[in-house]
Amino acid sequence: MARTKKVELTADITIPKDLHPKDMDAKYFGPEPKFPEQPEPHNRKIALMEGLSWYNRFYTKKEAKDFLINYLERIGRTDLVKKIGKIPEGEYKTTIGWVARLAMRGLTLNEQEQNHVMNEVDRLIGLTVSVEETMTGVKKEVNRPNVQEIMREKAAQAGGEIEGIFDDFLLAGAPKDFNARIIDEVAKKNVLPQHISLVVDPWNKRLVEYTELQKGKDAQLNEAYARFSKTQVKNIIAFIEKVLAELNGYVSLKKSTKSPRAKKPISIEKQVSKLKYLKVFKDEALKLDLVSLHPTKLYGATEAWVYDTAKRKMHHYVADEYAKCFGIKGNTILGFDAKQSEVKTLRKPAEQIKALTGSKPAARKYFKDIKAVSVSPNGRFNENMIILKAF
Image 1 (cartoon, rainbow, N blue to C red):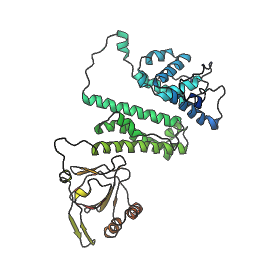
Image 2 (image 1 turned 90 degrees about the vertical axis):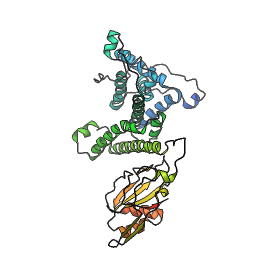
Image 3 (image 1 turned 180 degrees about the horizontal axis):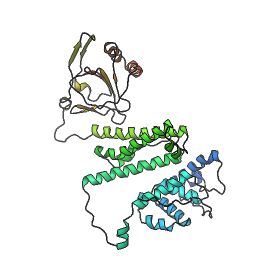
Image 4 (image 1 turned 180 degrees about the vertical axis):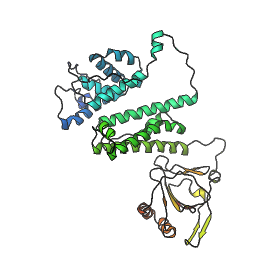
């Protein structure tokens, strides 16, 4: 879709009359924000956040739609109003509506804020009916979507809500302490685990882009994101990593909490029966004499140490904060935190395994200090793996 022609989103027009919300708390929040003069640069971020909070407290998506449309009308873009006016209010992002209203109340928007508003207009235009249908008045036959299509659409909607949260984060100046629960957005839409990749993929690409930006070696990226400071770029990368962690946590949660068949509860022994593992391992050269725990000890545990005797790799599993404990499906352990769990190669297995099977805090610190490449485990077991500890 072609980019909507950019307009100068400034409000050199008469400031509209104050809104008076019918709410008992209105007296505590003060009057509607107004900017007869522009705030000082060091106070601008605070003024913007206070304004957004004021509208967010008293108004909904219905008013957000009205604010955006009224603003476009007042700057002479009735052509855009005609395109987006029929879009249901539920599709509008409230933050953009609040920003448009603040511009009408005298706030001069910077380039980043202007881009956010016009990006939202572009998105809304993309939801309108095709030009052909509009011109001919002939509505194309639409096939009823199947269940998979409906669930993919829900994933896309959840992705749009998360993008909206990211917009709010950037508008707030990419602060370190920005509070957002990404997992709530996919949970509301009941997104299926197999469709999470539709939401995750754009964020993986975004993480790569901002990581390259942080290195500062790409001239084009440096120019495109020159408005962000080094601290803001660092905070943006942390935000993206949080999004990915919560989305992966959601998958683990959905898999580990999948309802069992009502016919007959499956015993733990049966659930772990297909898990491949090595019962006993002896190696005189390495001075190792290991006996594995039974896989039933893994089920319901929150932390585990598993040693791959063939590759001399130690797997440290930590339960995800949403799943709370491990589950087993086939030959795979579920419910672990992909970010906290690690795999490292042991150079001195006998000495290192002894240290890692001691007290929990000491073992964690010892493993963290091992100088070896750390990778995330995939959760799959094999016939060479010994379950050393599970608790």
